[in-house]
Length: 465
Image 1: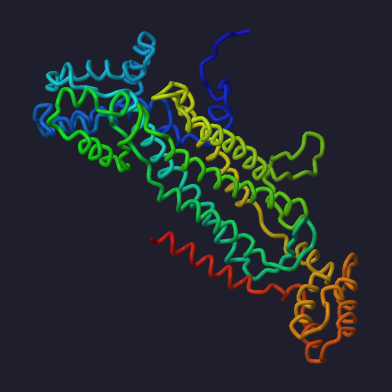
Image 2 (image 1 turned 90 degrees about the vertical axis):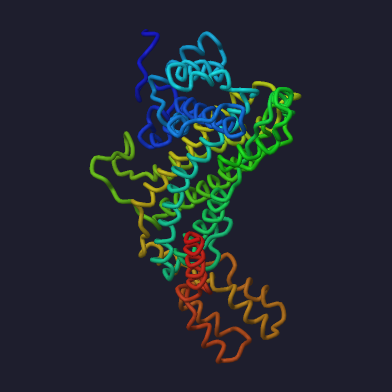
């Protein structure tokens, strides 16, 4: 058997770079090894500019400053390949990048400042900023817009079906009526809450030297306020300065980010499973696309594959996020390298998350309520109105109304006529009996439509802020 293959969607080891490549391709510019190298260049170049601004590097010309500011985004894959080539020798990725950076500046007007590249820094001063920039940008530019699409789809359906009654089930058993729209908006509200947290989350950054004490920088330039310099530099990337550190910037801020993603993914898994059940019960139907096959042996099948795929990918994503959260909280003494291996899997976690988000969107686009089937299930047993009866009896002072109603309704099915006869047996006034006789499963939905309107309004208002 051939031992090596060119990397293609067919030869990729993981589904993300193979089967699901088209779903997650937009993440590649953010979380790939190539972009990690580019972002390290970005941080190192801006560090040179910052050193110039405090006088440790000569004053830069406008053109030199512009060149450094745009350096990271101008790095090509071929150029990044030089870094990987040198890394084969150094076995140190940041040192390899530093050497290539030196060679790059050596042929320019900045050749006289090459010795100030990576001045007084440890690799983690660069890496902690680079990884957070990658994670933040991928979240803001790719994941959040996709999640907003899911929320918008749920809100649209919630508004459209806010007054369409549906049987609610608790413990898998018939409970009381609700509406399709209200059940959709529950998930929209939950997702919107977590997405707002993703948008507002504040990441941190550190530039404090080998073990967090500015040892080398303070020795060489004691007249510089390194604490202020560090804080200002970190803030320039939009991060909160982390000034009390070891060699690493503690990952607590990233772990919080992971945990918000886990909640987002858990909410969508919950939705996937509900939709799976609704489709199984024929309450929702799927659009059949020409040429699609549901089973290799059963021609009639139209499976809820989008929701199943979403559930599977998001479960894997949450497994990775959980592992990263547990691993990155711990670093031996002032630092060990195991976090370096772990943190490289941020892109994998986001990739499986994005694949799951895309699948649930696909599922939503091809499903619609089967109103006749929903109505049939709703009207199958009028005992779902029993809650209202026992509450009305309780309000008028009837003794132990719960047991009274339970003895007449529990375990059996009641149709419309039997319901009316049951109402006639109740110890209540004729006017109250008339109210209960007019009550139907379609009308006993409480404030579901108002709650849906309220939730939609709240979601839209938060998006406008």
